[in-house]
Image (cartoon, rainbow, N blue to C red; front, side):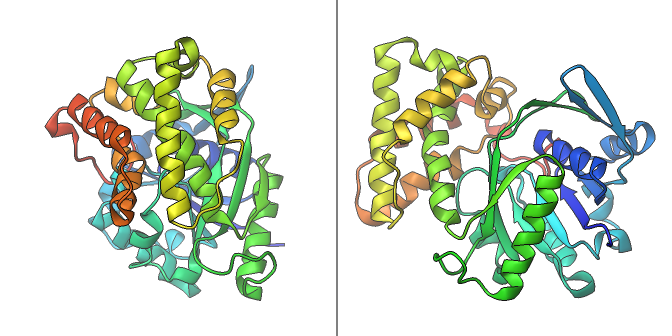
Length: 335
């Protein structure tokens, strides 16, 4: 059987982890990094995956957005069965969106699997990629980028994938979409990712959004690791207020909200107690954050329904004020 042809766009922690494990499992994988420097490093020295005390080096062809933005799209990137998009929301620039559209249109058309936090990206991407070819992914896999060519798998998790738009009832997607979804789930499972299909992806996306909208901004503003959020009653009170506001907005949008989201948040903080959230890392480094697509997205939808969300509005302003104005716009791909 022909190996699945996959292009991972974004050479950050999740993109490098996915590329390494998929390649090790026999998939035909290519990786798109932001810079020519990182692409050259990956091509010269290989992609190194650390799992515990073991390090495996994979040979994965790497390309750079810098070069792709100037040259014709290489044939290797035109025939992908799946394009796995692992860049952060703030890096979804118009040139990158156009590149993704060209990649998805090549040689019969590939499918785009989006791993972004927050919401709103599917609608933006649907201007460049046909909605029937857009899929969403939510993962709890743990990964840490150690260098431009090294990534550590820091914790096994679960991954859910499904069509970005379409029917909510299981088994009601078109046969073509259903078959593509099954193949992707099988390939990811074979690579060691515990993966499940879902036709209720917006519910799963919103569930993660509610968790991220509590943990990410507060860790960034308080400059604490995840576990330290539970250290005081005042912090816990802020967490609960953010969750209550977000839950009200989700319900107004017609999204079913699980009864145990608060327990999930506490569990995340406990299990990842020593982790620095991505937003904390971004603010500490003066980089742009995903606040507009997490808490900002909740604020925007709250205004549509006339729902007051003062805590979300405040944390949005504070996170943005924490980053220099020059850091509010990023490049097209994560470094």
